[in-house]
Length: 431
Image (cartoon, rainbow, N blue to C red):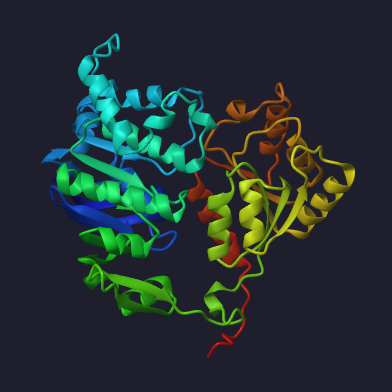
C-alpha cells in the first residue's frame, strides 16, 4: 500500500535527518515507528503524510507518487493525527469532527446524511459523544487527542498516520486508544502507521516495528525480532532486560536502573539552559533537554502549570509564582539571575498576556546572551497584550545573538551543536 523509496530529508543541507530510507507498509498492517529522540521518527511521518517534501526519493501510495496525488483525493485515502492538538479557533467538538468530512463535500460544504452518520460513528468509536457540544479548547489534553482521532476517522481513510497519539494520556486512555487502533486494524481493515516512544505499548499491539537510529532503519520486523536487549542497548545506549508477557506472548522491556553518576562521557556537558515557556508549550523541550542530560532552569511559571509540574518532577529549578498571581519585582530578579547563569535562553512559542510578557521584556536587558526563539506559531497569533509582546519580539529578533526557529527539531539541532562545543571532557567514571 505504502512504499518509501530511498527517502532523504534534512532541514538544511548540512543536517540530514532521514538518510535514504526504504520501507514498505502492507495493506491492513499495524506498524509502529520507534526510536530515541532525534532518530527521525516524526520527520519520517511528516514526509509520508506529505507535510514535508523529500530532498530525494519518493513516497508511493498505492503505486502513485504522493506528491502527484491531488490533496482532496489524498485526504480520502490517508488521514493524519498530529502530535500537537492546538486549534486556534474555539469550535465545538462536533464541528471539529465534521471537518473530517471536508474532502467529500462540494464547493459550498453542504453536509449530507452520510456525513452526519460517519461523524456519529467516529464520536462513538472514540468515546467523545458525551462532550460533543463542548468547546474544543475547554477539553483536557487526553480528550482533545481523542477528538482529533475522531476527526481523522471521519475522513473514512484507508490508512491513518498517528504521531505520538498517547503522549498526553494516562495509562487507561493509552490502553483505550491502542485498543481502538487494534479494533480499526483488525475489524475495519484500516492500515495504521504510528510513531511511538512507548516500546511496550508498541510491542503489545503492533504486528510490526520499525526501529530508527540516526535517520536510518536499524531493525524492522515482528516485535520479537526488534525488541531485543542488544538492539535497544545499541540504539538507546541503555541497559534493559526483555521479558515475555505470558498473557499475550509479546515481549516487554524492563529498564535496568543505573547509578546517577554513571553518565557516559559523550553525554556529559556543562551547557546550562534557561527555558521560558508555559501552558504545556515547553513539555517536549523539557523532556528532550532531560534526555540529553542538559542543565536546565525554568521560569517564570505559575504553580500548577503543566510545564511547572514536569520541570519540578524532573528536579529542575523553577522560578514560580502562585496561580493567578502577578509577577513581582523579586520574581523578576530571581528569573534574571537564572538567565544570567545560563549559557543560552530558549523561549517556547507560548502565548503572551499582561501577566507573563515581562518574561520576554527581561531578555532585552541581556546584550551578549545567546537566545533561541521558537516560532512554530507567529507571535501575532500569541500576543494578547495589544501588540506589546509583538513589539518586544521584533526588537529581540534584530539582536545578533538571537535566532528564530520555525520548528522544535531545528531548535534542538542548534542546541545540540552548542552543547557539543560545551562538552565536558571527563573520563567515564562508570568503567
